[in-house]
Length: 307
Image (cartoon, rainbow, N blue to C red; front, side):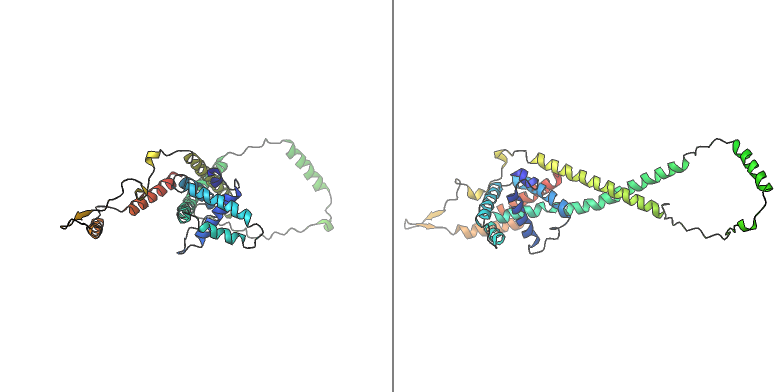
């Protein structure tokens, strides 16, 4: 399953489900600015980050259930003109769909990183290419030219030809007029770095080649890191569990015996609520929801940083 998330084409049903998540993210309100950045490369890195996030979350089983449901419903609704619309609605009604979409949203931040990385890498690669080109150009200028050996036979032959030409009569009809008017030489524009237009074209070609090679190397390394991370296993003792779902340790109702012997419940809930609000405002305690959000944000940033 994880391999199918990492690599497009491994499982068409997983690809379809991730397509539904991407479509939902693009249509999300409020608008998500990084939903479509970096195109196909951004999608590759989003899938890599999502694979790690879903593996180490408590919703991996839910994701597998959604994949199975999509597979079954897609086959059942085959031939229906509204097949895709109906399957999307079924997916949205599945348990924990919102939390899975939230993780896809977090993984899509890799698209934003790709854009920033491209800008920084472009500046670095351009400087390197220009420096390398300038160095080669200077070396080419400084290299001494090979001197050709003098040929003694040429002057003798030229002298003989000269004697023949002097003896031959000049035919006026064979006289050719030579145009001595000189055309102005084309101006060569040179920028501040000493590069001509031809140099710039050559540098641009080298830059495109090296820039694409560097990007593909970075993308490959990120995919390899994701493949390594999904092989890791988290010990059960370190898994975060929801304390509200525990079967043991339920709060007991506090009661105070009345004077006539009957039991009356104390209005402790309101007092506990007001005390909790006061402590929360002071920052002394945090709710489980806040703590869970903090853990989620921390895990997201850790995974994105590792990749």
